Amino acid sequence: MTEDIEDETPNNPLIPLPEDLVEEDNSANDTDIIQPIQETENMEVHHHSHPTHGKTTWKNYFREFLMLFLAVFCGFLAEWKLEHVIEHSRETEFMESMVADIKTDSSRLASMKVQFGIVGTHIDSLIPLLEENELLDKNAKEIYQHQVYLNLYNKWIYADRTIDQLKNSGNFRLIRNKIVSNEISKYDGFIRNYIDEMQSTLIQKQWQGINDAGNDIFKSSVFREYFKSGNFTPHSVVLPNAPYFLTDDNLVFQKFINKLDQYAVSLDWFRDNIDRALQQNKTLDSLIRKEYHLE
Image (cartoon, rainbow, N blue to C red; front, side):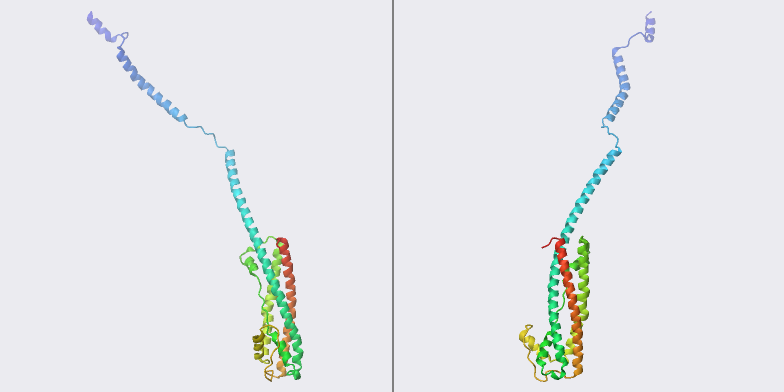
């Protein structure tokens, strides 16, 4: 009987297991089942811990582009404005310098006109005296007195420092007033061609020719003594010992007279150009002062 009971016990499903065994078994099962679920939950929590970003639309791109464009454009405007102010200031400085040069030109032109006018007057008085060949000795002192002034020469010096700066450095573009720019170019062209060029290629050569021809007629000691005793201040000449002239050849005197006539004609033409230059000088000076409000 006992054996039957012992034999049936292991196969009876209704017999409860010990509590320790049940707890150990459950814990083992819990570990096996719950652990994967917890890992999944942890992963899901970790995934949702990042902040959610909305999509970047074309409006956002346009707004950023617009802000960048405005920043660059404003910087460009500021730089352009600064450059404009600087160039305007340089333009005014050039015009002030130009007015100063014009004033210098005016003074030199006026002085040259007066001096060449004096030379022309003495030529007009000298020629008739030289033509009276038989009265040369009688008129010797008066002839020498007029000849003194033919040794004088006024070299034109153009005050072109500002114009050269405008042309050589490309700064003519700074002159925004086209009327002023055109008048400056017109004035510069006239001075260079009808004053500077004419004097160097015609007036100066004729003056030198008269001096060379005079060396065959006049005694240089008279002129040396004249300038030594009174410099350029008008005073009486001192005649040398007779004979008063180096030659009495009428042909030599006639060639000299011919050179004097040529020189006189050129001086009249040159002084007429000086008048025109002075008029342009005055016009340009008034225009610049008016347009740039200079005193």
